[in-house]
Image (cartoon, rainbow, N blue to C red; front, side):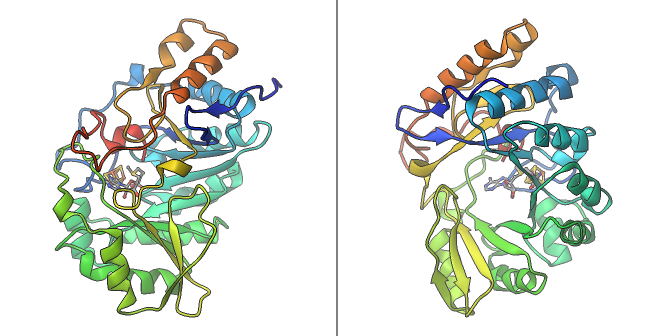
Length: 333
Ligand code: SAM
Ligand code: SF4
């Protein structure tokens, strides 16, 4: 095994150790803050990294560049057929990384145990509402029971603590924040609210429509006593103890409370592009050199160069901000 000679350091002293891998840009939901109702032009198969190509890059990340956490996302990662093998191959790397998926939970009822057996450590499941009609309104699909079953299956498979990601949308589910928290606490899921970001394919995000972290906290404080907990580190969620505990709730204020100064993330898209930030307007192609026969050392060097130029912040709050061309579903959220 090659030593980790030079980690992924950027020009502002941050070190990337958390790799987000998008396994596909396809999805079986159409969440309105992410995709249009008709879906998108999916990435052609020949542009998508094969399992072997993907594992070569993840291996370089872990064994040469100091990646310690690998999260599989998309699109919907459960739609990638080889997922259990990809997880097992990732866990076989040394030093062994922690693994996680971010998923909408559809089909997890069937696969949770196999994923856990393959070595999956954690899951984050996206659920914005427990009301069936609101679920259809947000996701444009009538699949709430599948998500609920998926969550239960994840917990049963030992993937606890199961985390739930929720985005609040004004006039749609923003009144439900407390109900969702109660529901998650009842089921022992750890809820985190994420501010809506300008990453939808339709470019429909509007700042004044966004439910801010402050608003969410104000709403929750009407029903619960929230005590801030220390120790956020490089995690994006600010955590609060709910009432006297033991439950907690997280708030991810990506727009109004940016955490860029502590960011330790790097992203690999399903077509082999390194993105040093969710909001980056440039990406670095590793697929072409990989298919042209580049060595591991060369690919590692290219990856380091891609990270070195990471900007200090996402710039959403600057007047000159431009939304990235790639939507969240293709970057890997
Ligand atoms: N399909 C999987 C899922 O929904 O969990 C993984 C991919 S999805 C892009 C990852 C996360 O990004 C989800 O929790 C989703 O709610 C969130 N997300 C998508 N679009 C968003 C946006 N515009 N602003 C904030 N979060 C968003
Ligand atoms: Fe699919 Fe996830 Fe986007 Fe919803 S947020 S459309 S589940 S990729």
